[in-house]
Image (cartoon, rainbow, N blue to C red; front, side, top):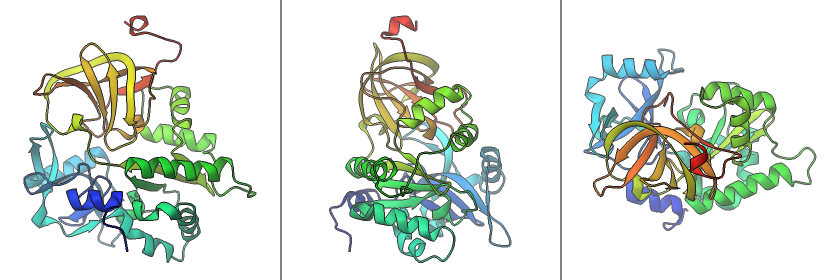
Length: 334
């Protein structure tokens, strides 16, 4: 039985719905929850899959998802006061099923397919933390296919760092031959780069940033991705007045929330105090003391504080965050 004071239980009791959960509503539409809790009796979501007549789940592109909501579920189109943006939000009374990542372990470990050995290996490696670790993404939704990634989610900052350490030990310091986990191959990294569509980074830049994050591994050619859910940072709790897209540079002062959903980086900048990242590509992208350059939507909060938001939309075209190697001050970039 899970302790009621564990990070997962604490978050679940407080918010009920958490990022990385999935919900099903309408005519077989499966959506990922993108914000903790509910707002005006709705959950904020991104549609990911549409159930077909044969029961199979078809993955939705951003355009397909937008068209589906606009044409068949216009009542889901919602202006969020907490974000001051329009996005899909499903009324609580329309939810048909909620898929919670930690609840999947018994079913995954009991499967009799090519994935079962991988899930058992992960459960063994993460056993001390398993009550606060879940499986999200296509495996949670029931849409996994050959070649699908395994998306792990750690609840709480401490759980995340401990899980990182356990997975790194298995990948880099194991005495087993072959080791339980391995680094991604160059072809896996390139496939990930292409799928992310981050045109503002070269592949070399993308690879440099990603390899040091220590949250992606491989098992028998299957990619493992570790993310984090924790209580929201204060900088993302209230809507801000949108001032348009800007570029900015500064040193990272605090990276405590670098891997959460969304990620937050405190910045040494004359006006912009935080960078908020909703796009998975740029989560964990920088560390304390590093000079970064970023492009996103500038917002000003009611207290006058400015923040830069990357990924308010799913694709975040033209928005980025990257470490500027070789530069030591903002003046070199301006």
